Length: 302
Image: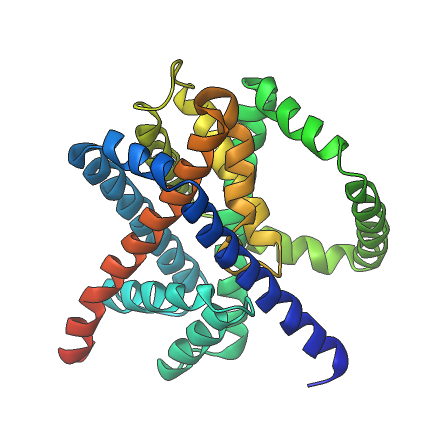
């Protein structure tokens, strides 16, 4: 491991530790507010939110299954379910690669070719991120301009985003110049990533379920409940940004920050922190619950 790799690992662990310490400090300083928030959430509401998150996660299993089959990795449902849900837990380990390392190892154990694994992973994540980004843009720009304006106003106050944007423009300029020279190959490769119609339908339901899980918890806190489309748009965009930030394991801290910005005008700063963190906790517990059956599946030699 060279010096730059060491620095990168340090940056990821630093971010992870910072988020954990911040969460502990916030919980300590706002214990009464958290207790109030927990009291407002009844069991039926929590159960409904958990079911929606589980439904969304099952839709993502379908996406992995379809991407694998598109590139000749013929997994059955049980195999796909276990590979997806077991490796998802590894994304919380700082490094942002362990879920992929685990996925690759498991697929190779099923005699999948390296090129097929690579293409299936690219297709799956392109479908997931592309669908979330499309939904957030369509709902955000066409229906809820106030959501976009609230984020842009916050980013405008942060001078370092101008610097980041400058380097991103340079990066994408070089990338486009390179791909322009490889246009024919890139075009064929991009066309091969097209998702089946059933996957698109499944992903629409995934984002509706995951966004609805957050929206469902807002009722006891909001004087005026935001529309479901507003919350789905916010959730999709926060998911995309959290995924793309490389030093944040599972987008932790990044996704929550964007949700806080989107929810504050409806539930206030204190409860927006609580609800964004609570949504992450529910999401994490849903992933644990979904991974438990895999222990029994392995015993039956899946």
